Length: 97
Image (cartoon, rainbow, N blue to C red; front, top):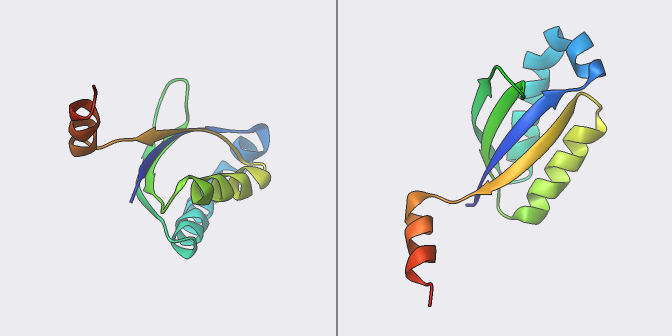
């Protein structure tokens, strides 16, 4: 399954209700599973972003649906990257003309 890395910032609403964020994370984990994906890792971070998630999903459309539903709740803003494993990277490079 493709891997995605999401760089996340709490919105004003999200930070005002930050004590609810563990429950929101659990709900997001459940929603990801319901869509056929899985949140593999969650990290609270310092700096430009507030937290980072690593997740797998069947395809880009599933990720878009998941992130639109998540963003629609108003607690987070996301910047998501499609990640390639080392093996995928090697195959991509090997296929270059």
